[in-house]
Image: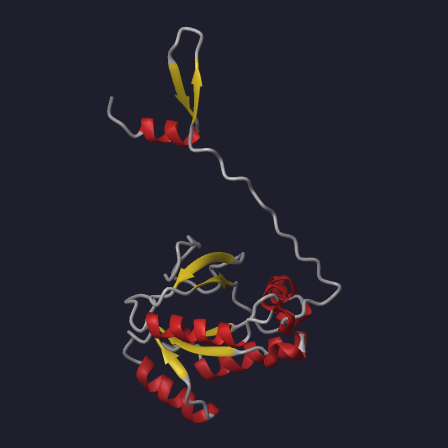
Length: 205
């Protein structure tokens, strides 16, 4: 919702199977890269549900944005969900709980969410929760400002240490040229390339 990333979205839990990266532009001109990470299940730190792979991605982040489904649909409990995820982070790497974490209450457009958020804050003793609706895009800017501010607090790269046994690979793909122009023997210029061909195929000629 806040970037140009195109992850798979569906009306069931754990739709995201791989991390999706997107550049997020904050209204005040700042920007950062956000990773939409797959959801964790109980026992993820033991490898359930590809949990180890997902947790390794969490280790590479500077700030954790913990998004809680506050609608409590399908007998989900926001308080239990929050505690279970943090327990998985702690069980995998105790240092992850030291990582700055922004708690976000999502699906606040649902009728039950306000009451659930009130109970969430009371039971956990947490006041600083950013309430949003990804569907209606309500309050998203407040979230982006909060993330950008927190990132500035931890911008020193030495604060985030990747474990030595974890190899992080980054693959750079050279962007394709939109088109090339060549001069033929008969003096005719030939314009070709995947991008220009896709554009031509859209024309009704």
